[in-house]
Image (tube, rainbow over all chains, first blue to last red; front, side):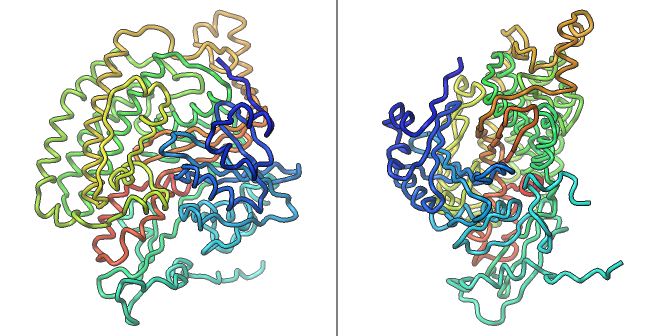
Amino acid sequence: MATPAVKGLAAVQEAMAENAAVKALAGLATDAKFDRKELTITVAKENIVAACQAVQAAGYNFFEDVTAVDWYPQEPRFQLSYHIVSHSLKERVRLVVQLNSSDLALDSITQVWPSANFYEREVFDLFGVTFQGHPRLTRIMMPEDWQGHPLRKDYPVEGYR
Amino acid sequence: MAPIAAPDLITPGVEDVIADAKRHAGTGASEHSMVLNMGPQHPSTHGVLRVVLEIDGEAIVALAPDIGYLHTGIEKTCEAKFYQQVVPLTDRIDYLCPMTNNLAYCLAVEKLLELEIPERAQVLRVLLNELTRIQSHLVWLGTHAMDIGALTMFLYCWREREQLLRIFESVSGQRMMTSYFRVGGIAMEPPLEFAKWVQTFLDSFPSKIDEYEGLLTANPIWLGRVKGVGTLSKEEAIALGVTGPPARASGVDWDLRRDMPYCGYEKFKFDVPVMTEGDVWARYTVRMLEMRESVKICQQALDMLAGMKGPLVADAPKVVLPNREQMKTQMESLIHHFKIVTEGFAVPAGEVYQAVESPRGEMGYYVVSDGTAKPYRVHMRNPSFATLQALETMCKGRLLADVVAVIGSIDIVLGEIDR
């Protein structure tokens, strides 16, 4: 029933050598895992646009979602998860970028997929991660004059008192 | 007490419009355009959507949606709840398809737990999901037609919707916020008469769709308002993240039920309607056809259920609550009940993304577990949120009155946009 997870870049590249995303990201991936039938590939933050272009060229044509996970107080603190699906291959890949709390900025992927616009604004609003090159990076959920980023783990559930 | 400072930006959405330097491109607009505010309390914005429009006469030059009025921090709340306590929160995201939300979340957690649920529960989930889809499409059709001026449709659609809400009430005790699915299965057995009620509905509904089509499909006033309005090409739909009926109306042949089956959808036979026009008319047609397909799926599911016996929950005593009788007669069940209610159940560490086809498009739940009884992070990828990005593309250069038709045709639910 349960399929064992494949962890580590070398193990994934060996087990899934024919996978389009694994092949496309051969030069950019820093880590990978295949867990619960989901492929996750980690790339360095400066390579995210290149990685998106590479998977797009490999047939992963539809950007679904980007969100963040706050691993406070661990470092690297933020994990950004991009979900991209291929309509022709009927497969999904998750690209992951790790961010240290000292430098919460990375390149926007809106030039690759314009649909990332609102999602990146949401991550900026709720986590405080900055996307360089975004057409209009402003708060989207919270009021314009809001202080803090509510989905961070050091932000209490009931707000500051 | 310090004096309260006035906010710097009184009308944030207006800057959104003005900041778009390309807003005049291709519209032929000149310097005498004006900015118009629509919403957040406008009756045809389907909730609290605010749209800031720049218009030149009656033509739309630029448009910016301003959202967040319904933001309640559901994603943050989820992190403070046990896994099983999140289910009622998911109903409140997209309040027109609560069962679809329940399903997406439960499937995600079941994937984390690597839990198989019995086939009978899967078929019942599919049946209720398709009924939810019909119910949601009825709300869309009623309000969309009402926005355009066909007031009768609203009453007709609500009449059939009422039948469905009664069925939901009979299984879950609630008309709208059903919370009927559980991690590991389904909360309780449906009532004895359930199959009969569903069958009555399925028998009568196709003729009701004919009735709606008789009112709208060949109606010249309706056609005048929807044909060629709000066009979106296939490339634009993919670039802007549009999913579900609006994408299929633009020629994107993609339906998660068929292409990435979940919950046993591969066992059902149905067609996926696809159109290429990409206008309001195509979105209307796709949804009308989808309702007919949903009836087919419901009938197959109901027939399957008739021959099925067995439990509606997985055999996982540490995850699924025992039934009342066991709990009151068996020591072990009592312990499990106590542990699940007071401490929840631990979920192995990991991350999953589970997408389902909601009435509005791709609804994905991204759940991250750190091995404890509370989710570390729950994120919802909601179809309306992405589809709203395409609003400007659809409306630009069209008339002001078309904005209402287009907003109705993309069938947004503000609850899932703002969460």
